[in-house]
Image (cartoon, rainbow, N blue to C red; front, top):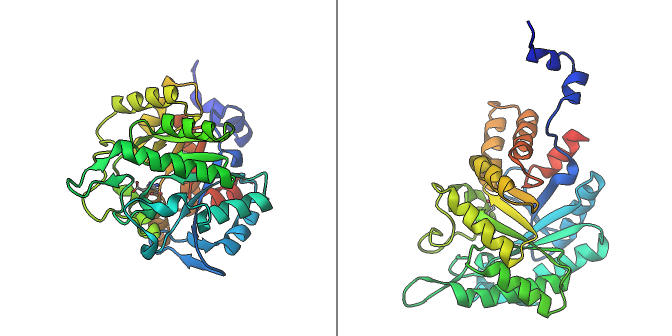
Length: 324
Ligand code: PBG
């Protein structure tokens, strides 16, 4: 036989030699949840192995991640209900614990990249990513931009290296870029949640933050899971508006979108392997139905194959240990 594809699979060394895509610890971004207080490490039921950390314990976790080669974390605050309001005021309070956390991380680990979340929902009494109009219940896009701009500037002033608008308001990348630049923060990067779908896979994350919408859903701002071309439209806008990195979210059910975006841009592409994707694998592994370690590596490699330069994943720590 002239052509035998199996020749390239005969030994591990041969397979390694012809390998097209591989996962590196450098590609991994670890999402972490921070809470106010001291000496807290609270398990998140729907995300086994993930915790809400008070700042002291968060620093210990980052020390561990640093040791195994993870150099970027994405930080989310779980805010006490009594501190939430309609305008998410705490999101741009420079003395709030989220800002303290950023400062302490950068102080202790200057080389660790801190990515921060720009959206109202963790601080909003409505549980929405934008301002909810009292009369109509609609999301007020342009008024929300003002808050997002202040939030991004506050985070960047605290030391954030990358701000990540996860809100899906129109025009937010441009607004945030201009706000940052006006405040002399021209080195702060924007990783835009470019194609963020209205997904049921965010369930466990909303448990972790207690941030589910109090009424309605997020379908007027997050994208319809049926749409593919719309992701390219969002991409083109984010490019013009000044995004430095573009992201697709969720990950696994949207690998086709990751590939579309990779083929349509020269910007670095990220994907968010979200909480529900994590929960599914953890649940199956806990039942003995799937092999945890192999499935993690296969899953994360599929992101690389689809075209990702980097992956936000709750598996970051486990994967880094597995591939070291
Ligand atoms: C909201 C936000 C969400 C996630 C990150 N930022 C949830 C949502 O849009 O309701 C989800 C992440 C995950 O599920 O892991 N700004």
